[in-house]
Amino acid sequence: MTNITGNTRIFGILADPIHHVKTPQGINRLLETSAFDGVMVPIHVRSEDLADMVRGLRRMNNLDGFVVTVPHKTAMPALCDELTPAAARIGAVNVVRRTADGRLVGGMLDGEGFVAGLRSAGIEPAGRSAYLAGAGGAASAIAYALAQSGVARLTVANRTMAKAEELVTRMKEDFPDLAIAVGTGDPSHHDLVVNGTSLGLRDGDALPLDVERLMPEQVVAEIIMQPPETPLLRAAAARGCKVHFGAPMLASQVALMAEFMGGPAAKERT
Image 1 (cartoon, rainbow, N blue to C red):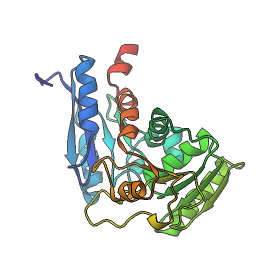
Image 2: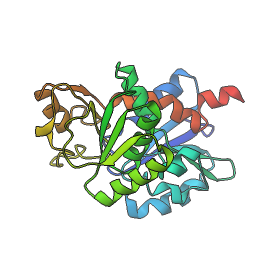
Image 3: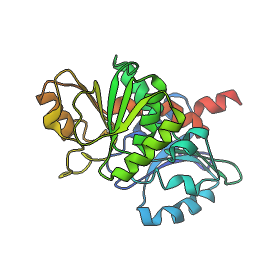
Image 4: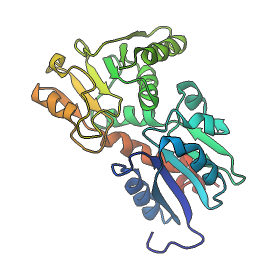
């Protein structure tokens, strides 16, 4: 990063807003420690400009890939040429590899990263009942990952109930033996409570669930990394819950993202 040249490979992250992103710091540390001649830069793009931006990125010949975050994850699949099986089923993309001829391959690592982050903190989801607020791109990936990890029961709640119903219907097809249902804002009677929405990212956001229904024996987990302590986590801690911050989800994904985009680990295998 101290000597960016015409040989340096470029990676990006697309978001709106962009100020909160932590992925560039993690990716750039990895590239530097791996002595990989590359750099990740944040790219602020609004939803209405996303398709134009992606068309331009296709033609950027020194670009190897980019990360996709709020609010673009569910719009990105339609802009890719190919999706991994997980991204296709979940209906969202959070990382894209650009091939030498400008084709875009989309993948989804949020769920895998979230569960790995839980386990890194000693929280094993297998056998637990889980409540998930949200049914968007990240939340859908987390729902699938929780199901694959062996949760005993899963409840999905969303402000737009039709989105929660659609996610639950898809998941019932893929996990017919899992007890899964659409829920309300009440997270009580679950072992693990997860905010899979972007609520808490901006000042003045509503809470993603009814915090008055939280119980001390619950684990309350976030996916938001900035601010580190969201209003939900503060409320959960005040009620005696164990809280799990958003940072471990990203930390668990950094190497996977870099490899997917053709970074250090991928280059070492070629």
